Length: 481
Image (cartoon, rainbow, N blue to C red):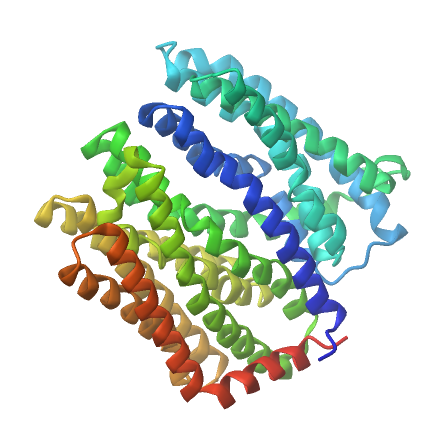
């Protein structure tokens, strides 16, 4: 089977995502081995807060992604983006200086929390400036530059991380500072791979005033949608765990969420290319493309659930400090399916149809649904297991409500295959629960559960072989050049 350039682009992004994943594992799985559970909790607080640093672009980068997804990387774009870069550089420097001056008044104690917040502020510049290049490369289908840019800072941080571990550093703030340094160095990567943006004569900002306003205006709702989307939908459960069970329980719960990064990387590669491809497609092609991506990502998700078993095995063998998460890890793990697919499908369709205000409502409702499930679960049962179960159920409900709404609004019939992910998750969780009733030994439990789930996958393939092959052929056809 000959693959198109678009599918090769997905493979390229997937390959570099795998490298990125390997480097991220140094943080997610190596770092917890060398610092205490409490120190890792502060690292996780930093990571969580840093997820909102992009808000200081006020939607500008989101507007770039929205407005330039059908453009090519040519001289027409270079002058504009040079001016955009200058504008963002000035904006982020001012924001950083102002917040650093205000920080001593906002956080009185000079403890770990203060330094976490200080380093979060220092990440504004190296998040927003590279973010512009990130969206530019993605939107103009520069997959090589986009993919490589995803791992450069991680390579630098991996080297610093290893050095700090060798030096037996135990303070999480030092690791956070090293991460911040690596983030600044990514700007150099974009300097060498997008020299035109640095050296091409920029268009005067006053000539671009209308376009800049349009970018801010278009991106602001998308930014607000991002604020309430993704990890924010489940942030209520994380903060609830921190508030009710303490920093160490928060650390363990966050650790469990990080185990799903292995699986999420693969579907994330599809998400990276789906939006610009959908943006360039004709209205008549959208239903076929949407359903094709839906089916293929479900097939991939079913296979990726197998990564739970090595992840759980590693927790039992290496991460005894976090072994408590095994009580609910099999509940948390399937979250990656609905997190990734909502980004690939639902959110991208609202972006393509230029309905960011509706997307804000969609994501805000996701936060509300999450709280409506999680809070009662905690007050009724008072356990992290109940919080994890409610978090998964709430995300599934939110995802399918808006899947159905999107199909109906588009005038498409809702195919039953859309709900295949529910069946996949039910089978996965049921196998783990049933097997745990018969085998108390963790290793035996994991082995038997893995074999049972693998048998379920093989059986499903034998029954649905023709349909699966047809879906893959259709996917390849839609990705033709």
